[in-house]
Length: 380
Image (cartoon, rainbow, N blue to C red; front, top):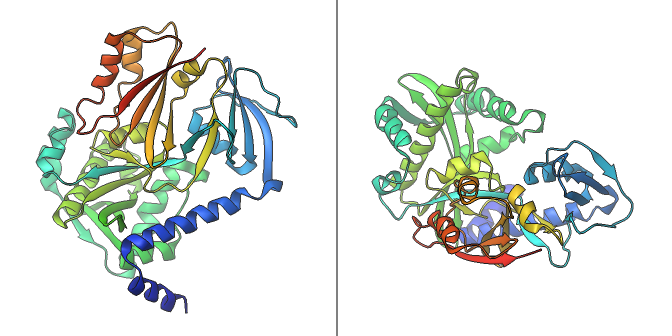
């Protein structure tokens, strides 16, 4: 019966409509999960042990650790509270809407537009990455895993171990039957070979949104012999991502989605994907947090914990520019945050920044076809 309904939906609904339906279902599932108020807690914790800011978290206890990771919290001290009392330097983080709060995505995708040739895309890679690709690409090849044994082996020996190695007990493993479904129905599972040795796998699927086709990475996998060797993993990871990009271009896709990662502007993985041409996008995200900035010192807080936020259908970035930071420090802090896909960048500052500093920040986005607007917000 389930298969019959799925087939009927495929016949009656366009791929774009099915995407929107899946998105709506995921959103509803998330909302129902949040509505279990008996699982909520109200706690305080510090951004840093010596930080002036405390975080007042109102939401499910199971989500607390995720919130701490998203904000880059380093303090381990948690103080239970029954009251919502807060100081001028309290940041409120809630799972339900609160007035004046930023609408912060939990995850973002890094999406590469494929309206250009592969040479144009790689021309913006750094010289070391281009050199690595030129030197090693021809030594690798890709082969689709077609039978159950190949799929099960890739899942058992690469997808699951690599996820566990990266995230430990918090790793979100994909169920075996879902791996098979994606590999055989919704997409494909490719094995990456270095000469005759299997060194990686790539699980990907087709996503259609607003009539545009995305080749979307679901998960990369590597055997222990690769991911336990940092230098080797760096090479194989770059080649695997590049081969997935090649495949997307060769098969006429409009975009290549390198995959979802934490929606944290200074997250290393997101920066890694940006350097490979990925523009930030809410494609794979269904969950949000509501973060209300402190009444005093918002610039300093956002210097320590910059945030993405959504306005309507647009993605924005909130950065802090507190007193006491020189131009070189600011340039260094935001060097890797020149993300494509942004509508606007808000600069929260203690006083109006000089034009030279604003030009430095604008230069981070000068390479983009559609650079974001920069808006200064002076706060106390």
